[in-house]
Image (cartoon, rainbow, N blue to C red):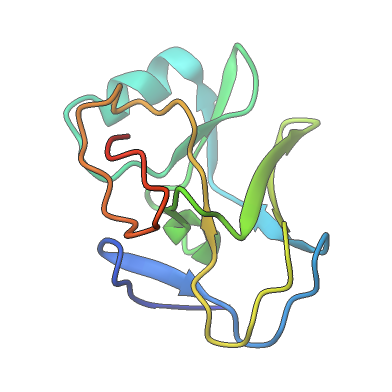
Length: 128
């Protein structure tokens, strides 16, 4: 995987090789913090690199060098984020071509519908 400018927003993560459907792409790594601290850290931020992995724990990848912290949102995702045993893992939902941006549907986000979606998908919901 490589990180580069994204047509969606800021930086994105791109497949360096073809990724078959259902394959684990990788795990987002970062600082494990209490959810309350994670929510304090993201307050007022536009770009958020935090995933809550339980009611009590979150992974803050803000200062991490993990490429997967740059997975952008899309209303037509090619990857899914799964929380497993306190880990934030990304899996391919379909075959992903070399050079394709890896994108996931954020679902409910900390933006609470206040951020305009820029994914450009035909089925775009318009807000995050």
